[in-house]
Length: 454
Image 1 (cartoon, rainbow, N blue to C red):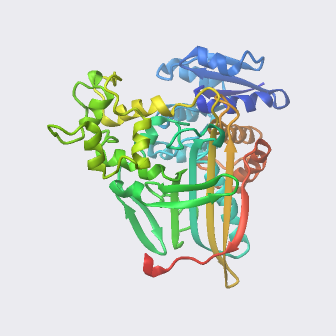
Image 2 (cartoon, one colour; image 1 turned 135 degrees about the vertical axis):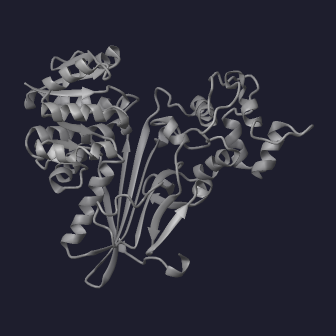
Image 3 (cartoon, one colour; image 1 turned 90 degrees about the vertical axis):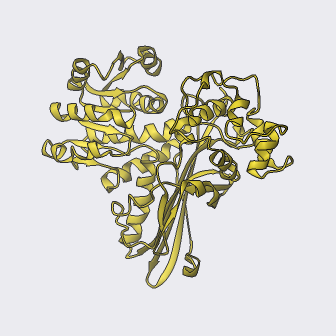
């Protein structure tokens, strides 16, 4: 049998493992599911006859190399910074590698060695990055094939709570890594190009500048800018495009409310707060407010944020129980961002019956035969439950499908790469439709922008 080593059995691996097990008989597969927690690996494999759960500490070099050497192909579902030693082992033992992570500089440095050994190191083959690349390149390539010239590309994606589980004033719950949500947008100004002009949004203004999106059947959304919209310009072949913008989708009103935390300084991860383990939620808030002999924490908060008591923004803060003097942070040597994450997790953790939702939205502006047109491409995916979430489905399924295509010799281009070639994106996008990941495209006139506004 052909052996697939899956390293990491976390949340994103559930749909990946289920898919490959469903193909195991017809494709002659045996899965080795490796995780630091044997119990987690056992839970994901569910005693399937074509799967073997094992405990694996990737820092145990002997065990790691032994597991990789035995595999036909390796999938790493670990955090991005842990891929590199696995990748080096894959080169040593001649194994293809698949990950859902962004290509790091260290991974890119292995490109020549991977090509020399005729190995495929497929990265960025999850959701975002992943499905965004594939669905975008499909339309861009189709436009070019007709002789069209790209004028605009905007791409938005968000992990949200499904409408039936949307029951808080923020219209949001954590569907993925909470820390990434709290730290979103930090580390430099967001940058993009609009009507041929470079634009920059510093972090202090990031959540004040949003774009509105309408998705039929699901209502209105907003999007704030990703940190670097320009990084894929050359990769997508869009060096001459006038407008290129990528953003993160949320429900309308989220960004304005989140900006309150930014203004207060609660998203800062650069310093540790003294005596944080003994701090109450109320004391945490008060740490960012000026001293006043008579004003309460609530009054000081409203004054500094310039919001009234009957403002929905105030209701959103109250809903989080931020001013509770009895709830303790219970985190030692914590940064403001870590404490905020802890507080938000009280309110934003998905309940057992909750479902999540992925929304992706692309806009393509182009000119063909002297006529300007626009294609809007939209995808909504709803999770099944707390195991087979929309996030796990859209991250895990493309990884699994790419793995099988590589094993079966359908993807043959060697080297460190992302899924922008037809041999990768055409079969995967087609098969994803069978699992409810469907893009609906609508063509309309393209009016562009008034350059004077930019």
